[in-house]
Image 1 (cartoon, rainbow, N blue to C red):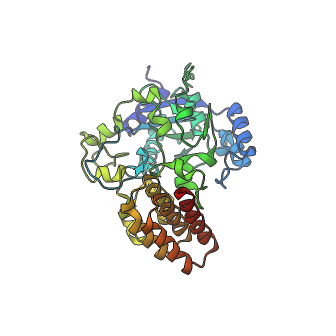
Image 2: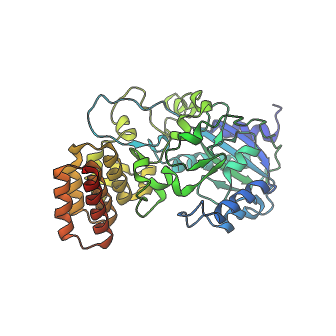
Image 3: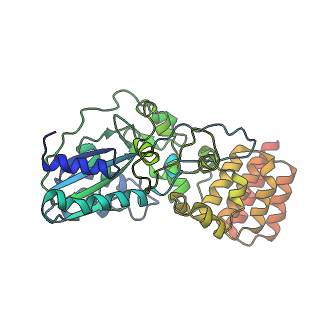
Length: 401
């Protein structure tokens, strides 16, 4: 690539820690706007109160995010660190999505973005106006990545890249720099639809996701009860889900993140890795990926804050994680969890947790679970929890016939 401003910008992006960089124009994302608005109207984004039709429209018009915008820079950082491993332990364990194994990626990428933005005036030879985005702002970052040639839309709605599949975090910079745009990739999933039937809850149709049924939504963004009919389908996921990525043939070719290797190498020793590797099966790395469930259920607010400080898991809050742990224990069905679930049913301050503990006891069954449910019913004041207890007892009776 010639020594143009665009080339220097791309070199800078890699120097500050991004694996991939592309450029697109500030033209509206017309097709994406139409699709996003249609999904909002269809209720597929229900449960995300901030994802409104107005926000969807704004996200597809970069010029409205920064007047006089000329270009949008798409950035990607890989985070894949290998498959889940058996722990050699009989402990009851859940699963956490790979992106949350290490430090919260928002903080890591913001640090790199700020370094990138600070250096732009030097290589441009003038003041540069820029607005930075890492997932939380109103910008359609997958659309930016696709139109800039970083990747293409997968049928699981993730952006797929040649080198790392969808195991990438995306970031974007809207700027007044006039840069040379890249061409979109001429790639697609073709006839492959492996991700669609693999989704346990049926959240996926080709190129569309029903947020209301997605395990990631249910275990992270959902603030109330997980719908009872979906709980058995959540499995042992307690934060997020990687299933549609794990079955993707493009992802099966993905190698360990270049960013992770860079952090562990000579450069960026002061930076944080985007995730942790479990390739050697060592603790505490495995505990971040496959945490023991009973200790999680016993966490206080202070214990939860101390254990997950600086990670994305705090997004679920203690009550949400404990709810998810109850569901995972119910799906495992091991009576060894009965005493801890019974304690949660009696003592947890959150009705959300007590209700899901009741459901889990009903799934596990047996005399001890039944006694715990009956004992709790006598003293439970909350109508919602009482309904969960009665449903659990009713299910146990039906199962015994």
